[in-house]
Image (cartoon, rainbow, N blue to C red):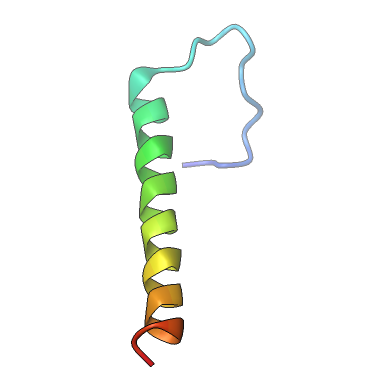
Length: 43
């Protein structure tokens, strides 16, 4: 897998890629929220 590959402008975004990005953002957000709660609330 090459992450530095140039994106093809003619290639439509697939549903799986959008879904993967959405899940990734949710997971990172929950992770950061959990760390902040652990630091400030459950100290």
